[in-house]
Length: 482
Image 1 (tube, helix red, strand yellow):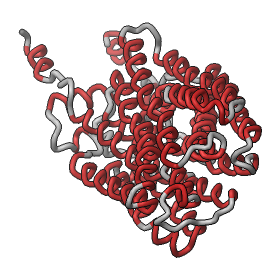
Image 2 (cartoon, one colour):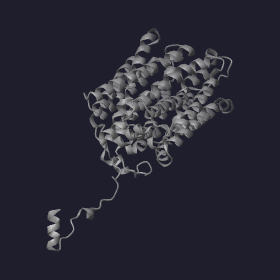
Image 3 (cartoon, helix red, strand yellow):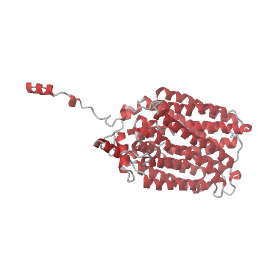
Image 4 (cartoon, one colour):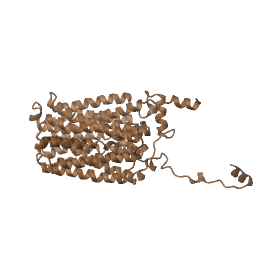
């Protein structure tokens, strides 16, 4: 065996390694912050309907408008720190920014019950805004972390696996929150448990996370070489701060198509996340315990379906049956168009068709999990070097949408038991899903863009390419011979 082959064999990459541990840490972090973010839907129902939930804890008489403010207030803060998250992780590294953001989110959860007792729904809105500010830093960091740790051929797999924490967080926030509210801890226990989960996540992140493979104290030489060589970057890559090509980003058609697509996804999913408990309670007449179970069921399907999408995409990509661009568009079409149809169907059901309503709701949310592979990870495709910045822009726009959706639903649904009012809410979401996926199909791509290059903004130096003037015959001979 030649020396070169011996060298390459010594760097055979392990099937499971620290890169997978980083994906697991991202999964745990996403799960923990989503529990804190989304338990508000069940909490508000429990706080305003204590008689049917747990009469041993205070009940608040909040109007529909006030409840809508509470549901949307998280996104008031979440939307303003996305750019900041992309900037901070480039300046200080993903590890420290993610740690403090998750810790701050846990603190906000822990102080929620006493603040509500002190200031009512206004105080609840205030602490939700602060939690949103903390969590707004996280997803730009996640995409930067994936770009630094994932070899290109594994990026789709590791990204999708880590993002299944979204579905896991959805399920736990709804199902477990309902059980806690109905138990001895009551609705305050929802916040306390959420805080404990966030703090436990911080401990794991502090011990095992690293900004990149070269900084990890647990990684082996073989895996480090595999990751770093696959990323094909300069020697000073991890220390250098690459200039951001703002003009190129904002004039990139594939990026703009992705931007509006993610906004559409945010509209449809946030409507379901925020309004499912109220819909189950108002239209289907379910009590809080059954409400929590059946509200969680669609997101349990979403969690299961995310692995179906993951395995399908992995097979298609490995066997080269479809390009990555075709896989992204196919998965996104399932994720948008199936829910568009089922949402319209849901709007025409009433209390006598509970089972069918739950089935359609489950199908709608379950199929929507394909949006993670379909479009969420696309920012890393377009620009691994600027993944955190792209995610900051996308999440700023996309998460301005959930500020509006509960307010729109609150304005339309003045009577929670009126089926026709819910029809309007669901039809609006269905139309948005259909139209904006068409835009993604027309203009989206998974090809890395020219402005991702590390030297894209470096000034051209044409004089370096000029052939020196030939002044003597000997110079001519040297030029010809060379």
